[in-house]
Image 1 (cartoon, rainbow, N blue to C red):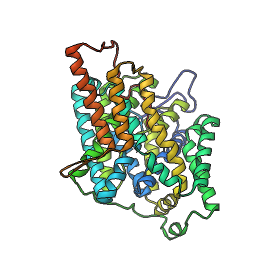
Image 2 (cartoon, helix red, strand yellow):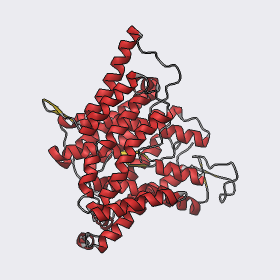
Image 3 (cartoon, rainbow, N blue to C red):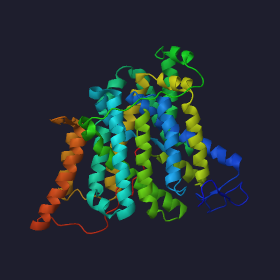
Image 4 (cartoon, rainbow, N blue to C red):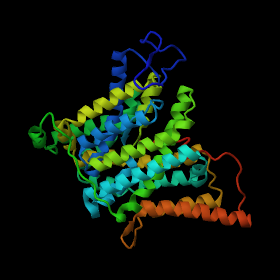
Length: 437
């Protein structure tokens, strides 16, 4: 399709039974703007939570999410409707990198992760995804996702105990909205829980509003220059594998819902996310990924028009130019973050188990069982290993462990034939996975 040339769908007002609005069509502009606003609301809760948990400037992160979404739409030729928000997979490595190398060092890791993802995208675009199926079968992908979430449990506890009442109420509201909410409301459970917790914290005197009053309404986001160090490489490598799984899974989900073959742009989607992550890290924002919340909005509205995503990206860009907005977000207290983090990090961990279940991973097979077991304990306990200037923490070591153990044991088994090899389709990593958030 030609960029910025969408065909009006039907009368532009309604979507008929059994119909969808495909990426190259749109509704009337007022309706398209309204749906774009829904996408902003849907991505907002998760995207602003990442900078709060990592200590990055919220306005800067949201600004780069808008830039990244625009780049994604351009690089994929407007064929893949998707919003690039902050990736939760970056929380653990950023926190670890900041503790020893500061924010600039963590940003260097974000840039390197983006570069690696972009390279993977180029390879996938040229060679296809067959090598990914072999490298990361579901047992491996599920273990990596699970250990990233469970590795963050101590961080959730550290915030929770600072204000247990506020944290507990935040967590309770998230749970209630999740089970009682319908449609878009249910998908906004994190945002609604954070708002409820924030109001309670304000009543309890836990919120400091002074920075908001001092901030200007309009101004440039806070930019930070990255600093590169080999020591952080081991922290960020596992993130690339998760982002690959997320992106491919999302492209396949959109293809299924729109009835269009998007396999030929899978590599371009990975490349786009990699470039967006590099640009974000180069200026002070967190790494990006495609968002399940926005895919949920499309499923609910049956509108897959990329025009709505241009609206959402523009809105995020404008929010990034408001220092007062960023200051307001930064006032969210630790108790609220502890409550939200308790649910969120556990959710990430269980999504790893979901990958195993949906892909029917056979844990009666000792190769699968051993590989995942080793990786999970290394990741949860946060084993560390320093080799020269390189620091390898639990996520990196757990990822390496599951990859080495799985492929080494399978290699030996191909020679000895001790363990029966299950037959059947091995899905692309993330094929049945919706998202991390």
